[in-house]
Length: 396
Ligand SMILES: Cc1cc2nc3c(=O)[nH]c(=O)nc-3n(C[C@H](O)[C@H](O)[C@H](O)COP(=O)(O)O)c2cc1C
Figure 1 (spheres, helix red, strand yellow):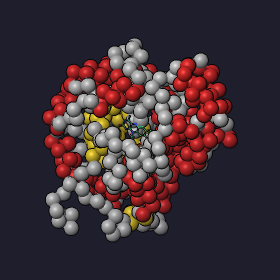
Figure 2: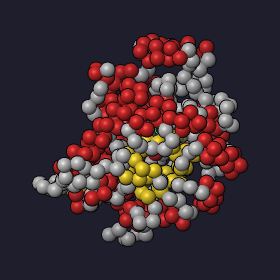
Figure 3: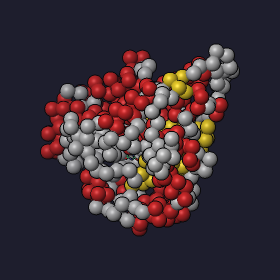
Figure 4: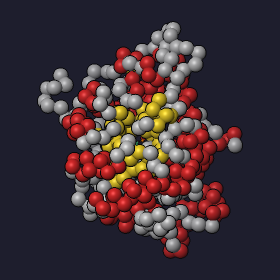
């Protein structure tokens, strides 16, 4: 519907806020403690400027690239995000939208839909693993993902469980039963359209995580899986190398912020990393991922694919990340807001907003392809970058 079309990601966010019950919307904003990192992820992009050419772009610009062996039509991939009661079609709607717009998708371990259904909607699917339950349990989940047809693995280890949000964490129920439905009802009633979407399905939001169990099983409740994750000893670099070996295909370590970790990831045999601070959900005070990107791309960009996620809200943000060394970016909140605003069409809308923004920034810079971008296309103010994990003085 025309009234649901939006021109910017900020607009999608406004619609999401209007459409979702307060706690559901709050869950999408989630970040740690004071929110310093989540704010920096977005604000840092505004500190970067452009150096436009007056002549140079061709009539048709080339936005296509490849990530982890997948041809994608724009350098934007769907980042995995956990169980969301944003829309009844959830990850399947996101997968369909990504497929319709020619890009790949990361599916969270904590997704609300079984991987088999999501792969059917988008075969360019990377399954994301948390280090939960030890090697045997992880191997079983990875083999299920392989059998389902996942074409890559993303391992996410950057979580410290330190939320302590100064603005308060939303109350998410353990399970949607009669009692919790009654408790949530006042919020739901303020958002009749959201309520109606769910009423049509005759099912409450699924707060179970089906990909943490065998195929066909409903999976444990989200909070049970979360508890198990908190109780699992964190992985070592040997564990990462073991899983990479077991998987044998395209393999990303997500959440790398330091040059020394990036080098260790290369040694562990990964094929890609995402420079990321989990969208500000890990240690608050970690700098914006875009600040850490240049040093990491410089150190390992010729050995592994370097992606970035965190704070992407516009096509011009994508261009800045690419010019500073990323092969592609991943998006989180942007597509969740699109999903909340208008289901599959809303996610397509977000991808179109980004595509158009990438294309016009390319044109303004006088570049004909995302592969032609260079660091000098971007004005980086003094003191912008953060080279984390280099020996003292090495980045002077
Ligand atoms: C609500 C929410 C849930 C998330 N769940 C996961 C997850 O299950 N697995 C994961 O690897 N990252 C998860 N992330 C992090 C995203 O994949 C991504 O790193 C982050 O959202 C990027 O920042 P952006 O939201 O500013 O684009 C989540 C992020 C949000 C906002």
